[in-house]
Amino acid sequence: MIGLAFDILSWVSLLIGAIFLLVGAIGVLRFPDFYSRLHAVSVSDTMGTALILVGLMIQGGLSMVTVKLLLMFYFMIFTGPTAVHALAEAAIEGNVKPFARKTGQ
Amino acid sequence: MQGPLGLYNYWIVIVLMMTGFYIVIARPNLIKKIVGLFVFQTSVFIFFITMAKVEDGTAPIIQEGVNLYSNPLPHVLILTAIVVSLATTALGLALVVRIRESYGTINEDDIHVQDEAS
Amino acid sequence: MEHLINIVLLGLLMLAGFAIVRTKSLLAVAMLTSIYSLLSASLFVVLDAVDVALTEAAIGAGISTILMLAAIALTSDEEKAPRHTPLLPLFVVIATGAALIYGTLDMPRFGDPAAPAHRHVAPTYLQDTPTAIGIPNVVTSVLASYRSYDTLGEVTVIFTAGTGVLALLGFRPRRRNTEDTGRKKLVILRVVAKLFFPLILLFALYVLFHGDYGPGGGFQAGVIFATGFILYALAFGLSNSQQLIPHQLLYVMAAAGVLIYGLVGIASMLLGGKFLEYQVLANDPVTGQHVGILLIETGVAITVAAVVLIIYYGFVSRRPAPGDI
Image 1 (tube, rainbow over the protein chains, first blue to last red):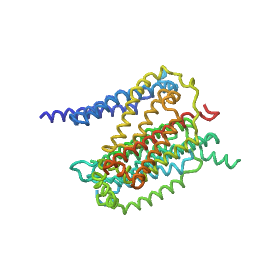
Image 2: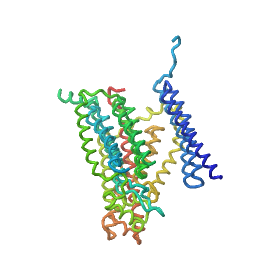
Image 3: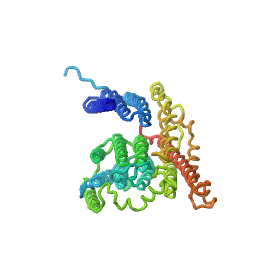
Image 4: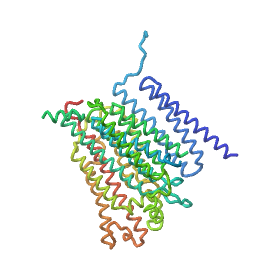
């Protein structure tokens, strides 16, 4: 019974993680300019990966696999936002202008 | 999968190889040519690793209770080939950088024009 | 299920390949090449080649992309359209592809356990490794022991390529004051780089010494070492990473790795065995194998790390040709 509960919990977390990643991907395709695309991908990507890793950890149980996944979790949570931050800095440095609708149209 | 359909991933790998080959012979840009070479190399790696796969086998790390493993020999060949491919790619890119410094362009057609003019 | 994952990954690889052909901006092509490599690394995991996947992810998706970006920064990032129509190349490519596909028709089907490739030496390697070498990872035992002549050749090739890049690009240290602009903007990047730098080096050591038991070994460890230093150089600038690991030291390291490999061979000859016959290195043949494999893997890692860093320093320290901005 408790095994089934854990299974359901892990699958729910995996599915929600996948939905987050999908939404991020749609955002990258649909948003108009560089910064809003970055915004779409950074938040949903970190959240989606985190949820998928949590789902896998529940599947792994108390084992060496879970320890390795925990380390990956730690790395992802640092590298994802840092990479996006560096990208945004580089875009500002390279004079990428944010998208703005012209008034009067 | 039985019959000739069981060869499907060899065919896709050949398509990938030909993509790389096409970039090498049809594109005049030298960096693009090196990218094409890289694509070709990586497809050859996939070809070898596909041949090493044994159905229902597992990675060639000996464990208790497992007696079907993939073929380790292609893995070894390709592992070293990947590192060598990095070395050759770097050498090619270094040559491109030097060509750019002496010709001022990395377009093959322009280089031919300059060579014939001199 | 495995076939499904296979087909999806191969389809994505084809998409990436066609996108590389069509894309004109070379920066985008470099990123697509990285994606192509990462996809093939995932395919290697599905095909049970974990060691190869680790190498491809570190080298193809990591270092190669950095080198391509560096080369593009030194040349130009747009591609001119070709002057000739691509009909003749297209014909050549289709003809070659058709011939190759005709050639595959005689091959054993995918995953056939009775294929000739699995009947020759591979069963011997798989059977003898636990007793004769005493380590579980067969890839490491074949790489470092059964076929160690091969590996010596590969390490020499890498050493030669490093020498070649050095001869072509050289190394010109930059003046210090050109790089310290924009220090405030980089503060987050620098803090995270400082946090990760020791962890990457630790992971490289783990990959090196755990290579006998799991995926890993000298080649991968060397590349991961180099990645750590490249991260440091990206965040703190070339002159700072010069102080951390000066280029003169790299030249010595590149040669020393190959030398360690060769000396292990000569030592086993002096102790009464053949060249690179590790059994004689200790009283017990299996322990001798352990010692030999560990020593040559260390040599490989040192050479690979040094050569990758020499190449990186060579590209990054070169200034764009006069006339460019």
